[in-house]
Length: 79
Image 1 (cartoon, rainbow, N blue to C red):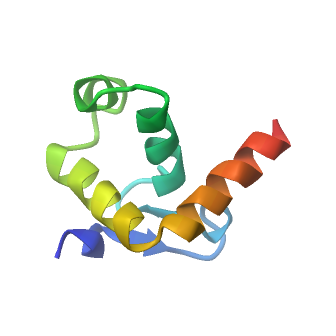
Image 2: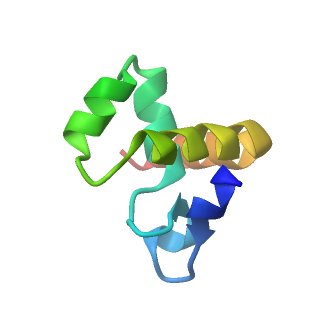
C-alpha cells in the first residue's frame, strides 16, 4: 500500500507524518498543492521525490484529513 511510505518518527519534524526516507512532512506537500503547485513543480523542487511518493501523500491525506489540516493550520499560525 502506498501509505506505507508515510511514517511518524518521534523527534523528526515534531512527529509529523513524513515520507519515510525523507524529512518532508505530508502537510507541507498538501499545503503546496493547495496553493496551486503542480506535481511537476513538486518533483522539480524536491528531486528526491517520485510520482509514487506524491500518490502516497495524497492517499494519506485522504485517509487523515483532520490530522493534516490541523498541521497546516498550526504551521500557518506559527508564521
